[in-house]
Length: 217
Image (cartoon, rainbow, N blue to C red; front, side, top):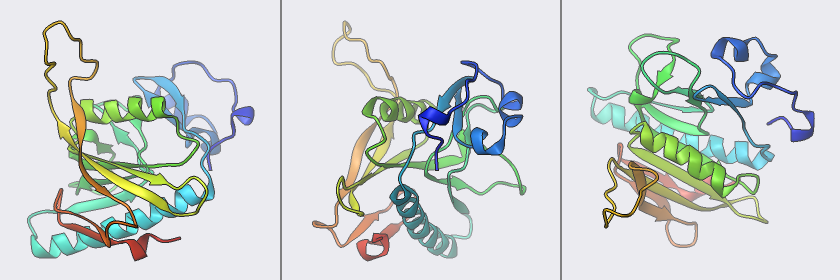
C-alpha cells in the first residue's frame, strides 16, 4: 500500500539511486525516480493489488503456453518490478503494475527497458489522467512495444475494461506548423469489457487469451 500523502517525509526534489536505497524500505518502495526526480506512487485501494495479481496470473499462464510452443522465446511476467531506462545507471526508473519482458541471461539482474515488451497499469480512482499520460509517454520514449491499461469500475470491485495500445515509434504531425509533444506514442489496438467479450484475446507479444471469469474478484 502506498504511503498516504500526509505521512510522506520531506525529501529533496531529486535523488540518486544510492540515496533512495538508503531510505527505509517502507518509504523507498513507494518512490520512482524520473531522471533523478522523486515521484511518489499514488495511494491505491486493496482492489488495485488484487486485480493486478489476477492479470499477472492470466498473462503468466499464456507466457508458459507460448514458451512450450516456441522454445526459442522465453518470457517472464512480473508485478511491481522496476524498469530501468538506459543501458547503465539506476536513477531513472518506473514501476509498472505488471509487465512482460524477455528472460534475462543471468539471475538477479535488473530489468532494463530494452528487454521489456509489455507494461501495464491498473487504474483506480486515485490515478490522475495527467500522471498516467506522463508515465505512458516515458514508456513510449523507451520504445516499449505494448502498453495496457486496466480500468477498475468506480463503485464495484471489478474491471470495467482493458485497453491494449501498440507503439507508434514516430508520430508525424499533419502540418509542419504543429508541434507534437511526444514523437513516440501509443494507439489503441484492443479493447475489452466483461459485457462484450468472453475473454481478453490478442496475439501480441505472444498469443494471449484470458477469460473474464479468471479476472473476477
